[in-house]
Image (tube, one colour):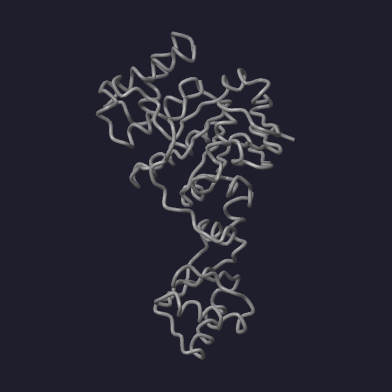
Length: 326
């Protein structure tokens, strides 16, 4: 069998009485994007910090390309790149100067530093801004430069901690395309995200984390298949009407819909038949929905079904800036 690029077995991390991770297991196949999906406080950044040797686990073990992250920390650092939640580039240097500085710090051959920096600037569409101070860059440009800096030493494994948080939609889509290009070139990417769309569009496999524990581990398609081929949403107008409609549907359908405010949600393999049955029950109960939507399931639906709540809208992360791991 092909060796996993990243292997995690029984990993846990405790900060005093607080449990950040508990008994986490997963493997990441080489040359793929692996998504750690969950809300703020789920333990995603703690996982990244352990795998990149920034902090030690309280229990269990983890390996990157066969090297133990505790016993072989130095070897692991030479094999990885890290772009944390906060940009680690110097705002007073130009983009080109930042990449050349990282080249010197990571001790790549001097003859490779200038061409490597030029190549990355072109690849990340930063050539025109290469000789401007980074403080003049937009948020999307800074984020692209930060990821480029993590790639200067050409690491086979790249860690991206919420790489698109705070970016506008156009910048997010551009960064997703760059991630796919990296994987096409053989890089293994582990990314954490609160954006369900991001995991769905980029990751070959997804681990869903909630309160430090893994609650699902599968492909995005397989996770969505748990809900069936179709999701039906009924907007009832207010929470009370939604609760009464849900109660009416249980005996009529033999299953309880998920309720979120005034919205009821049901998943099914045969969406057309279910919709007919639902509308018949609603008509008999005198509870006509204000709006009906029929669509394919999303990872957001999966997360809601697994945890009972949605991921919150991503916002500015709290806490100290992450240190770049060379």
